[in-house]
Length: 175
Figure 1 (cartoon, rainbow, N blue to C red):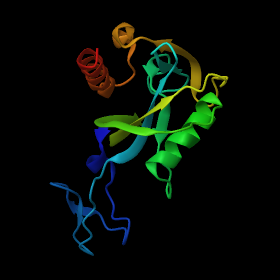
Figure 2 (figure 1 turned 90 degrees about the vertical axis):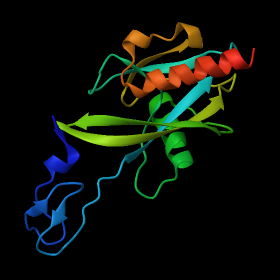
Figure 3 (figure 1 turned 45 degrees about the horizontal axis):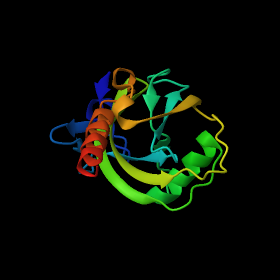
């Protein structure tokens, strides 16, 4: 696995080899500064009537078989809200009602042996009592958990430990 700035060797503007890599790749030919920015992602905290949150089992690599929140990458031209609604439809077959901001988390995502920095913007939504969930797209299965029963040893990504800590802190504070 390599860092993103090591993966890109040539300037996307002129094709010349990058002259330096630190703190970011810079082209010695056309002077393009190639900034390494986080890839925007979304996540969903879907809560049912019993106060449990939905976690999904990943059906694809990376971390196939591990638990994640529903969500994914933001497509070009989408807002975070639009993207989380699209992902809920694709992964679970549901339309989301009201959304509220829940927090943001920083992590990385390895794809084809390149590590990409990510920033995950989390949203909260309540499960519609008439909604029927269906695992689809890259979701193998799903399950609702009380926060204190989250399967932390089966989390797909490190940022989920921060999310779990924040949910535990929030639940303790609001009892």
